[in-house]
Length: 265
Image (cartoon, rainbow, N blue to C red; front, side, top):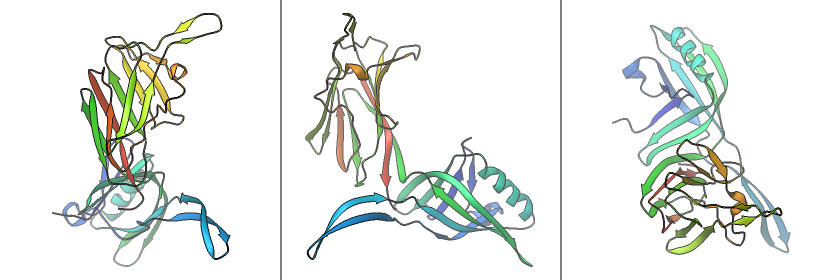
């Protein structure tokens, strides 16, 4: 089994294999660098003690050399270059610890050749951390286990008839989030209701900017419900390190889709 493996996946969900050259006689990526982590921090000195003021993750660039094999080296180089233009891309990375993805683009391709080989030095500029996607479902509860210290967004979909939708997130059995929607009365006396019908789906999303709360009907028509928020509740759930339980007692089904994010794998 080939444990170390790199693939590129384009926006058409097509895959370009980069580390199975002997089998596919196309291309082989080697001397890969930039797979670690990098952070920028600012400190404040008080006497001989340095206090951390800010800490942020830096955008990464992953570099590697791709060798193209005869008898179709030039044709395969062109195929690779055209493949990279179908942006955005995902870099797939398999190791003995698991399978991971990273969003980005191939920002640089430097073609070179000598008497017996054609190769390209590439630069992949990452637009996300490494991640493992998940999609889990249940009736009134969904459990997601994360071993990453990076909190990540998710898309929660809840079905079930309810007049005042409410949900909760526990992490390692400790309540972290309680969200509630309620009726709101406008200045003209109009009452905005967050009620969910039999065919409605409530969506709580932290995988978008800005975060969103809305419902869709059987035809997919959206109705924004953020204004129905009970403002003293947290409402928005992020997947954190530990066992995350997303719960709604009145639900007939819950689906949670998202990704566990890692700085380096």
